[in-house]
Amino acid sequence: MILDMKKKSTDKKIALIAGALDLPFFTRDALRRNGWDVYIVGLKNFVNPELNPDLTVRLGGAWPAIREFRRRGIHKLTFVGALGHPNFSDIRPDWWSIGMLFSIMKHQKGYDSMGVALNKALERRGFEIVAAQDAAPELAFETAGVKTKAKPTARDARDIERAVDVSHTIGAADIGASVVVDKQVIAVEAAEGTAKMLERVVDMRKNKRRASGVFAKMTKPGQDLRIDIPAIGVDTVRAVAAAHLRGIIVNAKTCFVVDKEATIRAANDAKIFIVAME
Image (cartoon, rainbow, N blue to C red; front, top):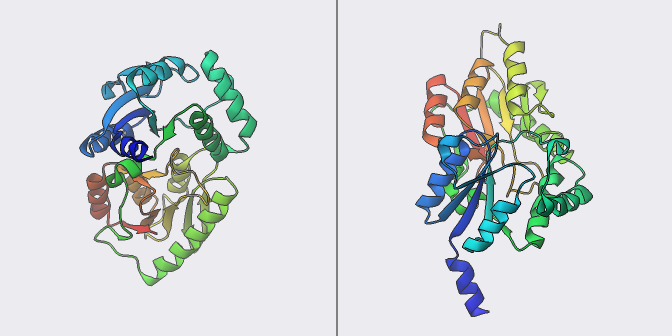
């Protein structure tokens, strides 16, 4: 038992399974700063080639990666980067992945439960799924509080309370995790994702003269925080400003902040507040 505990504590090998956008770059760098030996597997048609992955595989073609993990003694996996909502009908699985797909589809009841089923299927095959924000805590806001020069007012506080409540309600129903509130609910995230939802809000409020209301992107109740983690970044700040909203609400420790310094700087420039909540 002592030997097993020592082995676990010193196992710093990890495979980063990388999707689209910039988050895999920041995750790679943060993991390395935290002493991890990172092996990068890029997902074909999603990963930015500038990430320079060690191996690239297509969705459903996992066997080459699994074989390499076993050869290199890699047991820990972390998933970051956008995939949207993958369509199983577009996947041409290899033989190893067919067994995975059967396991996932057997237990999958909604978009979130698909991620849970994926994690469990991988664990049954000897892998440990690691939340990137646990391996490198600086990828999220590590403490609760206001992170910007702008602060919420009493009016904002009422919108924040309403937004958090609605976000938890739709999250529990596996509808989405993001919501916009300006006294009343203006928009909720559905299958289109957060960016498209904010585009709708920008168009809806393009003639608004004065900023009001908040955007909340919260962790769903019971969400498996090892995969499909909420994230905000500079683009989020710009969309919130364009929608004439006053601020952004996220969870501390469980929401990725892509390029944290640039995100806070953009919010300060736009006079947008960002609040991290426990």
